[in-house]
Amino acid sequence: MGYTEINESNGCTEDEEVHMTSFCNSLIGYTVGDALKAAGDRGYPVDGIFISSPPKINITEYDDTFRVIRVKTLNNKSLNLLVCKPL
Image 1 (cartoon, rainbow, N blue to C red):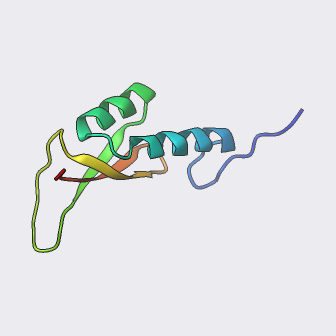
Image 2: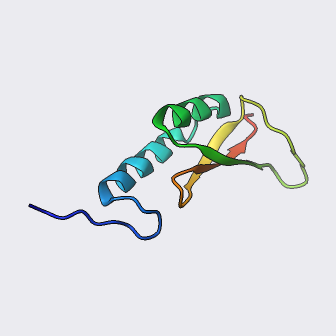
């Protein structure tokens, strides 16, 4: 029998971490609405949504059509999304 290694940074086994990383990478390019649904369906709560915008343009609100450009996992297995307005 083998052993299961636990990652101290997020409490996941190595296998769980691979699946979570793969899932997070798959969210890139999704619309916010689709990403929230997919994350919820997999049991990953979204802790925060942050907006990226071009220099000198201040966008303070997003809608479901914004696109996910980065996903960060947090220690409690929740996600932070970085989104941008589509062209």
